[in-house]
Length: 72
Image (cartoon, rainbow, N blue to C red; front, side):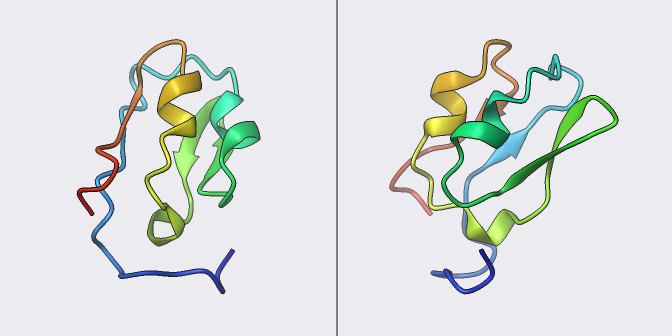
């Protein structure tokens, strides 16, 4: 989603790959395609597309993702 942007480098999105269990839910629920699965773990591939909606956080069973909606 390279065409949808707000401000670069202001998102509060953080992914702890050590905690990631590789379920892939973040890739399914993110409306901006911020994540991809690589090597059985999620990876942030488009950080600046994150709109801090919280869908990834609310669906991550291992609490590997954090974001503070409205801050960035």
